[in-house]
Length: 241
Ligand code: SF4
Image (cartoon, rainbow, N blue to C red; front, side):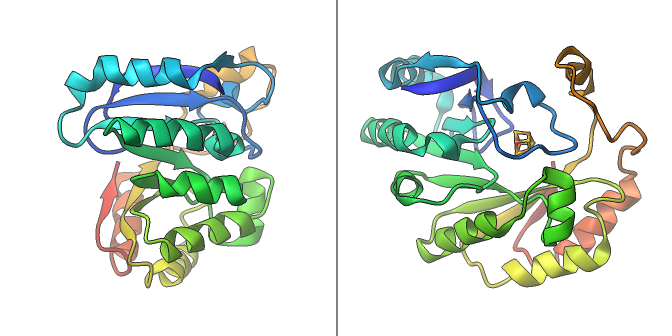
């Protein structure tokens, strides 16, 4: 049983091919730019049987083609790693491609079991510097980096995702530092730069939450290209998503 926020059918953004995307409820980060603040609270969501999610995947299988499959995102899926591992084992038995989109902020035996039946991890790195990470998310990046190390040890296919926020996560020295940190990670196939946007801002008023980045402008093309040039020194492939 998983506590689900929502589903997206025919998703093309979270992993390869066409996918069923399952958004789970609850996240311990409080990213300043979170576009889905309604997924952060651990209250709410809809308890959903793994069998029902498996059946949804079966119904959508004709659309998945060779590359597609099921992605579980959030919120933060690793908080429900035990039940999610059960689901992924069921999905793998049925021949589905499995993917998690995670901030990597939980690391325990359930998470270790989960990654064994995960084909691809989309790992969100918020910042390589601990203080900046705290500023952006409210917490440190130690567990995320330990989780990343485990993915390397287990040779799990990984794509990094990095939101480029002007003035917060686009400092050239830290982009170099992140590249240096991960350059020996052979399991990382690519890094996706995600431009900063304000698409979720309207939800903050509704939730009576404060959006603190009103004054931060969206990226210029030049800022995105500069970041891409720096990161391309370290990663096999860098794309602007
Ligand atoms: S990790 Fe994702 S869901 Fe959690 S607060 Fe950050 S952007 Fe929102």
